[in-house]
Image 1 (cartoon, rainbow, N blue to C red):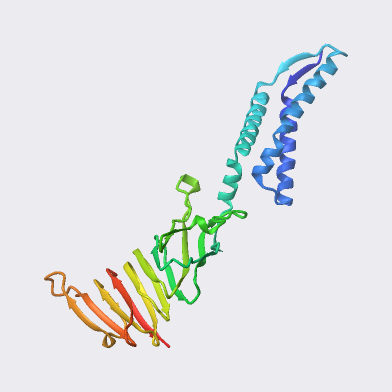
Image 2 (image 1 turned 90 degrees about the vertical axis):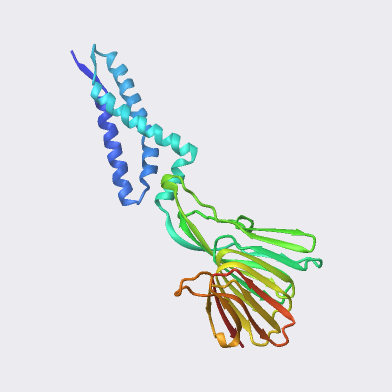
Length: 309
């Protein structure tokens, strides 16, 4: 009488096919997750063949059926793992995990922003957000923003697809409001990642400008300024002003100053009684030309000022 141990053949064949798949994955650089997702249905095929083979042999003789519980348990574990991979793949989690495992730090270009100013716009208000920002004057009647961002990204992953994801622009009456948003971030366990941005914003130099620095690093290049600009609450402010400008620069509430102090008229005062405490610049003025236009700097921790031809 022949004894048939159901599960032994299934386990052997499953291990054989798994070994073949893993071996091929090494030669053809196949992804291990994709191998597991593709391989597990073979378990059902092998188990079905074993049952059909048993039914075929039972017609010719009287086999004694015996279960190999260890093999069946092992095959069940492999099948459960395979089904689990398939379920995760259908929800998109596997693709997400694949992107996370293959992430690398990359620098990408920001989607460019171009906004033509309406004729009625006479003032631009900027909220810089929490990233370094360079603001330059331009003779064109257009607000333009471009730059780069750095983040951990997968091979096919893109953090930003359009400018509206990192900057908001709204026009109200005679004022255009520009707000720099935070970049998308993830703070969930293994999906945690950071992103940083460095951008340049071009503003028409003949419109009024008000900048809220948010204790941020700002570089200001007005070029030939033909209007009034105000910068408030920058942690580190670097200003490059052309010698040919017709501008009066006024700075108040500045704690540290870098530049040629002889060019400025300064009034300093101490905030406390400690003898080693650095004085704060209560008022500092500098003028080029007749000073028909103004550049006002308030509440900036550090000011670096230079003039260029």
